[in-house]
Amino acid sequence: MATSRVLVVNNGTLSLKQLRARFEELGSETDTVDATSVPGRLDGRYQAIVLSGTKVRAYDRDHYRPLVDLVMNAGVPVLGICGGMQIIAVAHGGELAEGPQRVGGYEVGVDKEEPLFSYVKPTVTVFHRHTLYLRAAPEGFRSIGRSEHAPVEFLRSADGRILGSQAHLEFRTDGREILRGFADLYR
Image (cartoon, rainbow, N blue to C red; front, top):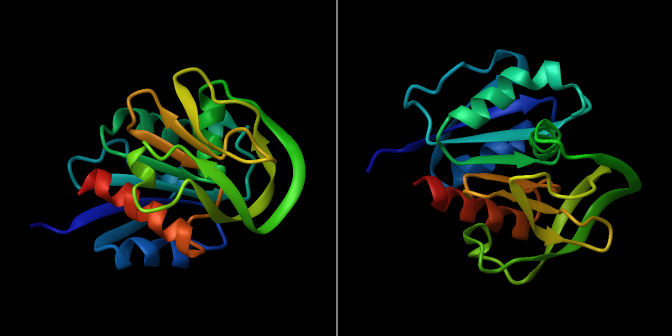
């Protein structure tokens, strides 16, 4: 079987090295581009796209337009992490709100029937480092994980191809197991 290849879009995360390492541990090769350098098409080179967290606010639709266009037209599984999820949500009409700053491990309830959560229990502990939260899932998406702090900790498109996580899954055991569930979707 050929090795899978993941395009990791670096939106300014501080943990790019750790994020790439998790996918490489799962047997996928990774290439990295920044949000302003995404290709117009994948041309069969990649089996998945991962959008990292961001230091730039997800509100800047013009800045992220090429990235959103790629995500919508790629035809491969996509996982947005933290700011990556927020970019996707805002592009589809989602609204972000300031909330309490969370840094560290927090419990989140997940919908176990979702393939993304195949390797975890119904309550996971995942790593957070942010103050922005999605108020509700935008049209065409639904929340598949929630916590006392946020109604949308995990997001899924209606067709199941586009997923998002408020948490940084590159840290903590539960996060890594959720990444393993995502890898099952493209291998």
